[in-house]
Length: 442
Ligand code: OGA
Ligand code: NI
Image (tube, rainbow, N blue to C red):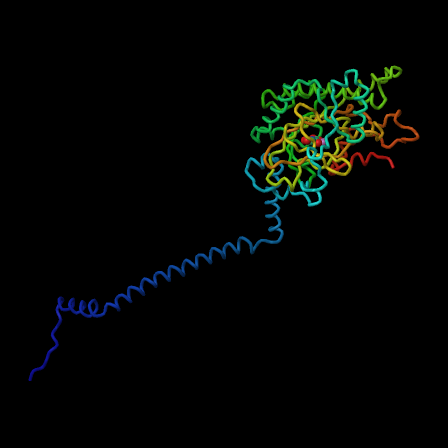
């Protein structure tokens, strides 16, 4: 009988079997195995990735927000605001140097305070032919003086502003003043920042906005304020850079002071207070007081603004002194209130815009008007202006001239001095004509 005996398989036979059964006849099984194994790897990796992610976010959640009390959230927000606030304190020039294409919230005025350019309120002087009165200083010194004095009186009563041409200040003194001011604002921030101070009485003060310690909304202006008297005492405190700043600005300050005195003589004459020989000593005394008087130079820089309709360079205000002599470059921006409308002041090369300040309104017992004005900003061009504010010495009382008080014109204002003005502006937001309003009787 033949019994079939299972042969014992040798090595080579095993290999053959393996090849036959697994590689040749069962390839799907192997592939499936490999496929499953890889997938398992991927899935395990994916799960561990998810797990680590969840751990991370759990950690974040636990140590980041979940454990923050409302007070901590507030503190974090306050810190962020403080950072922004400290940026704004560095000024608009610095803000623009870091590159912006929108006006930050801090500078956006409430809708009612914005300079709406399409507003029917705004009359473009060129279109409407509504120009400020022009006073020719050379003519004022000549035989036409009586007529020019009348025009001067009319300008101070009706507009509170006029343009002064042919004033005799050499044009290179003027162009150098604009030029050195431009160079000052182009200095690196750290150089300008040396002169930042919150002390209102400092002989030099670099700053931004109107009153950067009080303003809720900031305005689009940086400034350099220089006290000018006594000139030899204050100049050493003025910026030492650019190297020619002290020399050029001191020359400009002296020239404008002299011009102010000359205009004041005419103003006093137009009010009937000088020019009459019987009161010669009294007249000399008044003029001596103005000679010793205070002078503050404010160099304004208005960088280009990406959204000029949302903000202002300076909000509506009046100036505190007797007269302001304003030098503006060729870029428009100054607007004055006239018959409840805002009118643009057209820049005239080499001319000064002269305006009546609060002290002259008080001194003239309301005859001459200290008028509200503001500055709009420009999307393309940077603008520089220099306001030179002149008054009596700081400790002097300003009061209505007794000769201008009579039954028809009773005294309209309280006595006031510079220190009460300083107190006033450091105690409240000096917007609009609050200070003058506070000095009015009745
Ligand atoms: C000022 C002022 C106007 C201007 O400095 O008080 O009104 O055009 N400046 O910069
Ligand atoms: Ni002003």
